[in-house]
Length: 296
Image (cartoon, rainbow, N blue to C red):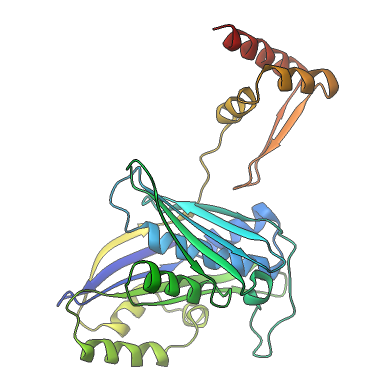
């Protein structure tokens, strides 16, 4: 069964909810970047959070990026996607790891750090992208995103994000939910929902029990209306032609230097880890093209 996300709201239009089940998305990220268990959980939470948020973008060309820049060993975390259900991302240090917490959970906050910033960038086709930045709360990603919504967008939100990993380091469960209060929502509805959220097991345990996003939807809101179901995937749009363009952007002199010294080039995509190799003949062709461009 493919990973997917569902979105909807209660029939009184007081609450909107997005719920995602995405173990394959996170496992793809783990394999592509050869991540440690704790780094897998950190990137996985950010990937799920990015998908939950990007789904509310209105136009196909709109994009959303989440930057997590803390003082922990993992360095920076960056994920980016559009409203098509595709997401990509990477971390600066894929080997960052930490002992399990006392409660047996992966210590994401320790490798991310609690000093730093979370930045959300939305390119909505305007002259300048929207940029919202807030201090990190604890580096656990979910709480940091909830703080972003409250401080930057003034929208009270409940967010849960989780990744479960087996003894071999493979992802067995991953997902989360984003619940947001709409204008005019009654305090009674909010209090009732808060109590139900408190009663829930961790999101990964919920899915491990064989429950689905639809089950969770109806558990949280009995009169919920599911408006959309969308498949999600880890996907990068890089290709050989785009990488050639990147090489050309280096300019004639730098390309010619690479050709003379190395006689080959190898580039790795930060987002997906794909490697692109160019031999001497291909570099000669690129140097010629770059020289022709400079003449124009």
